Amino acid sequence: MTIGQIATAALLAWALAFALVIARIKGMGIYAIYQALMAFFQGPALALILAGLMWKRANGKGAFIGFVGSFLFPPSSPPPERRRPPVPADPREVRQNPRCEACIPE
Image 1 (cartoon, helix red, strand yellow):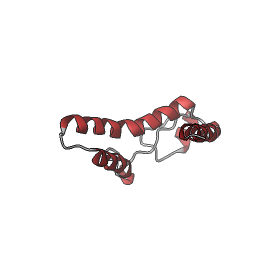
Image 2 (spheres, one colour; image 1 turned 180 degrees about the horizontal axis):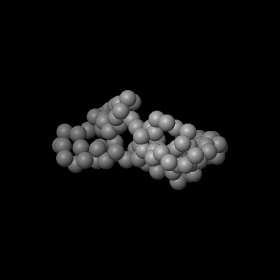
Image 3 (tube, helix red, strand yellow; image 1 turned 30 degrees about the vertical axis):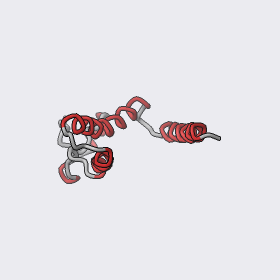
Image 4 (cartoon, one colour; image 1 turned 120 degrees about the horizontal axis):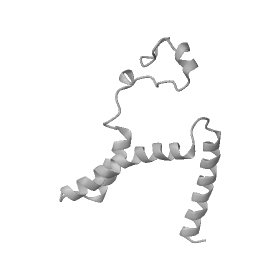
């Protein structure tokens, strides 16, 4: 088998496994999951493009280290203690969650 056929078979197996995992996630569709993944990758990719365009000494090794480093140490995510709790979508959950800051009591 050639490298291309092996890569195709591996990606096909990964896609099938990923589809089964997504099917078990309740409350999220494939589009929402796709958007979440794209948001995760687009910031570091844009930083690499801009660094390569604006800096003459940029090279492949530095780009790879920067790309991996941006996933390990994301600059835009707040520390865990400053993250706000999610706003519940169900009105019945609003009454059951006394710590919700965005909830308006009846």
